Amino acid sequence: MPLHLPAVSRRTFLAGSLAAGAGWIVLDSRDAARGDDAERNHRWALFSDTHINADSAARQGTTNMFQNFQQATRDLLASRPLPAGMILSGDCAHRDGQVGDYAQLRQLLQPITAGGVPCHLLLGNHDHRQRFRAELAGQLAAPPLLADKHVAVVRAERANWFLLDSLRETSETAGALGEKQIAWLAEALDAHADKPAIIVGHHHPVIAGVPGLADTDALFEVLAPRKHVKAYLFGHTHYWKVYKRGDIHLVNLPPVAYPFQERAPSGWVRVELLPEGARLELVSLDDRHPAHGQVVELSWRAA
Ligand SMILES: [Zn+2]
Image (cartoon, rainbow, N blue to C red):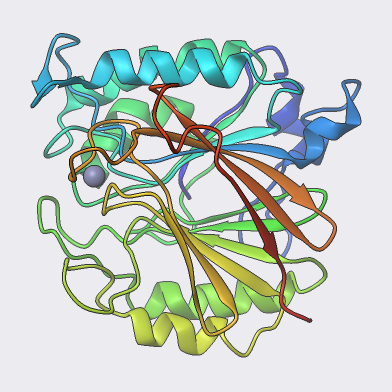
């Protein structure tokens, strides 16, 4: 499973919500906002491609990734209501997942969990699974479900999040889920068909161009016929874009760190889950960017 950092002020959250019932780890976020504004249950913060370096002064081009993360954190914590959870869809680390990168990231995440927002981390191609686990193992809520992958289901009031692991080899641009993980996903989806399913991975579905998810077709053979699957979200290309494959929404999350294309926004996405869809709002780190505050409404395909 991905790393799950419980909200520090709600220590009972994990203890009360971890259930290994059907053979996979399920985190129930619905208790996270108990006692707070019920609207919190529907709010989520989506980060991607934070590329944190052990050195807080490190830059890529003109971008200081440490400062970008802090800016995104300030914006997240200023959200009202606060989100029920934050999901970081991979490339947590700068280049190749050094232990110090993860130590720095742990420090950076602390204000978010201390603010009462649990964090769920995925791996990208610039991460290193063993070092990630070694540095953050004390924070893991349970042993991993698949020995060599981090996967999880996070239950929310209006949807279930399925968090995947497409890291194939550190520093290899392309990624893959592999047959075992896709089989796990099919089972997990069938066992959680009661609500809309939102899938999150690091790599984009391959069409052409930038190397992405090598087993895109195998993944969509599982997703397409399961009509409760509504959207696939990912990062990797460092480019904010919302489009579709058939009637499944594709959401390419912007990087918290640096964009690859000049003038593309850095930032994160504020999500409100709706009964029949979702409302996405781009939060650019530069509030003068033309895309700042852009809202995209997704409506779910019929079940
Ligand atoms: Zn990246």
